[in-house]
Structure formats: C-alpha cells, structure tokens
Length: 147
Image 1 (spheres, rainbow, N blue to C red):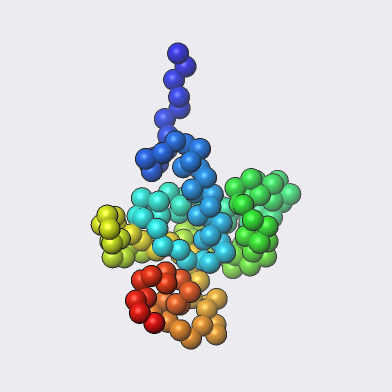
Image 2: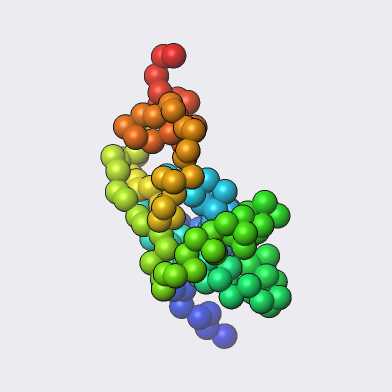
C-alpha cells in the first residue's frame, strides 16, 4: 500500500487532523492574548507555526491574507495579525516568539511553558493586577486559590 509521509514534529498522541486542529486553535489564542501557557512539546510546535504566520502578516499580499485565513480560526486574530503584530515585527527577521519553561503541571507533572510574542509586555498598559509579573487574566482561576 501507499506509505504516508513522515510527520514533521511531534504527534501529541493523536491523529494529524487533531494535531493540526490543536495547533490552529493555539495560534489563534497566541495572537489574541500574545502569551499562552501550554506543554513544552506543544509550545515548540506552536513556535514554528506562529513565526510563519507573522511572516505572512509582513508580506501583506492578498495571497498572504488567504494563507493566514486558512490557519487562523477567528477574524479578530486575522485582523490583529495584519494590523498590529506584523507592523511591530517589520524590522525583525525571524524569532518572533519565545518559549519560557515554567513549573510542571499539577496532576500529571507534564513540563509546561509559556509561549509569547516578543514585546507582549508593552500591550499590558493599564494592567494592574499582576501575579509574579503576569496579569491575573492569564492565570487560571483555579490556580489562584481562595479569593
């Protein structure tokens, strides 16, 4: 029978369609929030796609819009990519994202990491509620403990 092409990157214990769905959702979330928390394996895969999407944003051609729309799930993320993020990285060649390892996840001890776009801190103007320098809205409510 016909052999499948080998998968580049990690599988996340699911089929390629599920893997691609996970990555598309995460790219969308990363563009919207500019910093998200996920497992280290997913963070490394996300970095590849997130950087490619920024490159599409910098191209700003109609073809680039179509390619970006094929990956991104929401119009908000698409608009933010082309209107805010692409101009911010106009002078920079590659390396738009950063992966910061953090404490392992409670429950299964999976290695966790933050993925963020460089310069995301400047978008926090007006954010006053911080936990360890991170806005409260980025922390899960369950992790905050009793209010």
